Image 1 (tube, protein in one colour):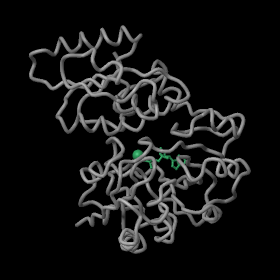
Image 2 (tube, helix red, strand yellow):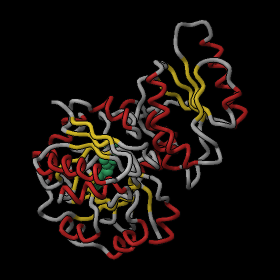
Image 3 (cartoon, helix red, strand yellow):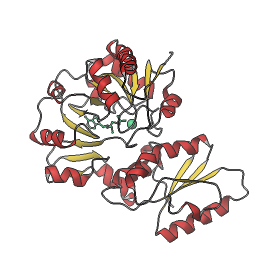
Image 4 (spheres, rainbow, N blue to C red):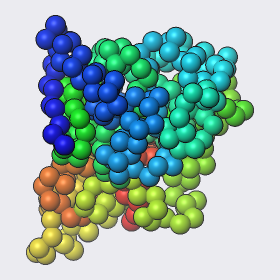
Length: 348
Ligand code: AMP
Ligand code: MG
């Protein structure tokens, strides 16, 4: 199919006309990529099962992996869910619009194609002017997973979306690079205490400040404590670059030594090697393609850059990438979760 490409810098009158034209595709049961503050999303009418199936086909996504529903006004939540828990109302007041997806029991009208057969639904109100305007114009809630081919790093720039989905969707609304760079925090409010299923920019500490007790899914904790992962490997691989990614663990001095040694082994061999370092450490290394993830003192910057840096290694044809481990804290949990998954739990 021919994909209509729409470039928007500012939401002026011309842009609004273009958005209205893209919204027609959604109303007709088609697929449209649009920017949000987290990553680009691949949208379709959340209440139309045929439209939802097109998302799974375009991404190559397993059909038991549920989609998040995006809305652009608080009163759009009620028709999607069986009831709105008190805790959900508090979270909406504090964090919406923003990078938080709230899982609630679904309304009967929500197609099971959307929820992967579950009785629950994830809802998010994105904090992005183009996303909001587009959802309003479409006139329906929009199901939207990340706009990448399944298994690839999520797209934070228009060129990533083009590379993965050009010719596979009806239209793409391309704009500036996404502000946060990691997907939304997902919290399940259908259980007590609530459970974080996926960490994101809204941190555990922020959620606990509003709700009190909040648990974290074993999938997340096992992920950052790799000793606990029972069967590491391909099963968990996600967000992955084409090159082989290895996380290098240890003290800062050990990490530097391990990477330097690894690079020396590759010297003279016809293989393209890369290192994902930081502003503070990139000068340590003298072989291969050295790229900084950002400053160690700025987890938000590193988070924003992670997926695009992984794709940069792909663009440069890097076959093996050593990445420095990142110290775990409240602000780095989401970043580490994505990084370790991208590496398929390969550590040295
Ligand atoms: P993506 O759309 O690529 O950001 O992925 C959506 C994420 O939200 C996946 O990790 C899903 O498993 C999760 N998700 C969406 N809806 C639900 C739900 N009803 N229950 C549990 N997880 C969900
Ligand atoms: Mg995704």
